[in-house]
Length: 295
Ligand code: GLU
Ligand code: ZN
Image (cartoon, rainbow, N blue to C red; front, side, top):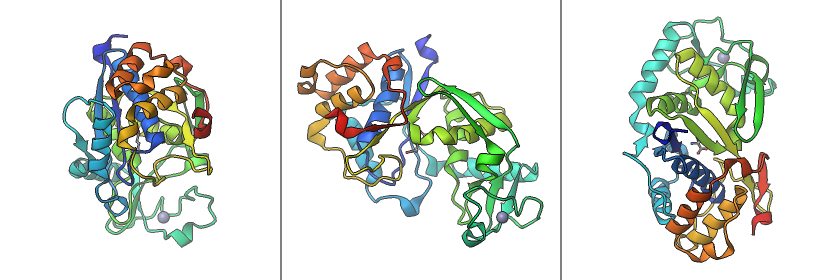
């Protein structure tokens, strides 16, 4: 591949600190980009201030620096992009592609997480209402570079989904698609907890006439207590004095085979080894991985 055409990114949510699972995802996207001479961007997905942990943004940046990651260009924050998201929502509303929904959580109980379409053909004003995107009665499929083929029927398995919450906050699905396209991202490498968000994102790309990036979903790390280290997991910050050994362990989680003495090196040297030896075909084709097996 022509390296100059590859643009990758890491997009942490500051609802917590980076944990070993996010380190694995960051490392995979970094090595996949750098091994072909591509760019690696950093985007703070700070869409949800009530769920933001104070100090998490700074701690995330400090962890990335301590662990030796270098990003290209300016850090982007989604909190600075509200006018773009709002404009898109107005456009989707005016085209009839989205609609206001006033259903309460209680009203939606019992529909199994799939919106039953109650407000689809009603004309609520869009203030103080959630905004939902109409989905087509179609199956979306894509071929993930590691997980292989993934299919999901948007009508039957997802339903019309929220793109702006009732409290006015913008939804991840909308912001991520808009920002990846705006930043020219060609390759999305992230945790397998987002595999089943991808068909919604493919539909948004299609609707907006945006290019479809390549996808690679890495296994989600499971803690000995059974916790999945996904977006919603709260954990202490990555230890600053364990950078090289934890990077080494993250390499092994990704199926790479670093020499044993590499964990005695500086983090930058572990990353350099990873870039020189990166082989994405070795990543386990699994949605989850037990951290205990990597120690
Ligand atoms: N912000 C999301 C998270 O922390 C990741 C978004 C993405 O990589 O698409 O889980
Ligand atoms: Zn509704």
